[in-house]
Image (cartoon, rainbow, N blue to C red; front, side):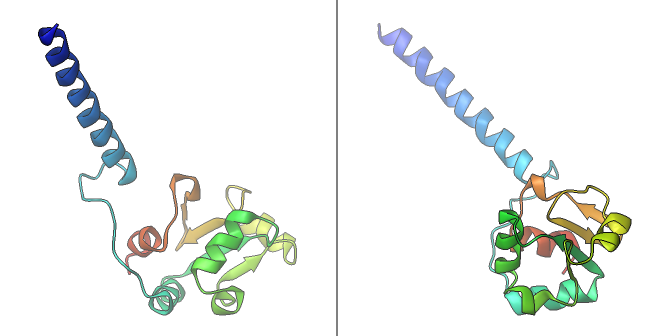
Length: 128
C-alpha cells in the first residue's frame, strides 16, 4: 500500500513539473527566457509604440479591442496610430493582413494577439 502511494506521488510530481515546463515554454514562445512580469508605464509604452511605427486596427464593438485600447490609456491616447476600421474600411482592407480585430502591425510584422496580450508583452515585442 505504501509503495503504491510513493509511486503515485512520484508520478504526480513529474506530471506537475512537465505541466509547468510546457506552460513556461508556451508563455514565452519557447525562447527559454523567463516570462515577462514587470510594470509598464502607459505613457512610456504609447510613446514607444508611436516611435516604432505601430498601427493598431480595431473596431469599438470588439471586446478585445476595447480591452487593448483601455490598457493603452483610451482612444484619445492612441489616436495617432489606432485605426477604427468601420470608419476607415478601405484602409483596413488594404493594410490588414488577418482581417481579425484587433490587429497590431509592428513595423510591418503582424503581432498575433491570439497568443496573448499584455502591455508587458507588447512592450517587449516592439523592443521598447
